[in-house]
View 1 (cartoon, helix red, strand yellow):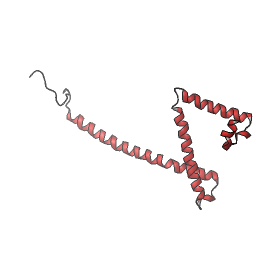
View 2 (cartoon, rainbow, N blue to C red):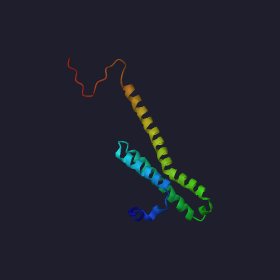
View 3 (cartoon, rainbow, N blue to C red):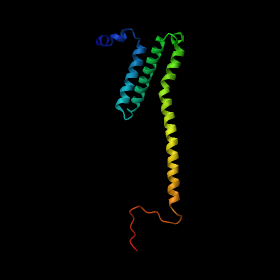
View 4 (tube, helix red, strand yellow):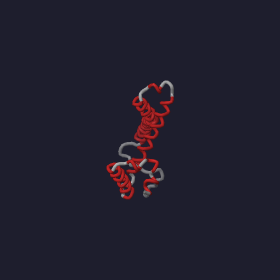
Length: 133
C-alpha cells in the first residue's frame, strides 16, 4: 500500500503484472550494473537520456515556432536531431583543421632536424661533454 502512495504520480496502481515485472527487472539490472565493476556503463545510459532530453527540448521549441509548427512531429524530430549534431560537426571540423596545421608544422620541424644532422654523425644532447679530448 505504501508503494501506491509513493508512486502515485506514475499511476502504479494501474500497472499489470507484466509491467511490474518488466520495471522490476529494469530496476534490478540498473542496481546490478551500479554494484558491478562495469558501473561506467551507467554514464552511457545517463548520457543517452540527457541527449534525448535535449532533443525533446529542441523539438518542443520548434513546435512553438509558427513556420516549423506546420511540420509533422516526425519531421520536427529530424530537424531537432540535425540541430543537436551541429556542435559535434563544428568540433570535428575544428579538430580536423587543427590537426592538419599541427601535422604540417611537425613535418617542417622534422625536416629541419633531419637537415641539421649529417650522416654517420653521432647524435648527442646539447650538454654532452666528451670524456676524452
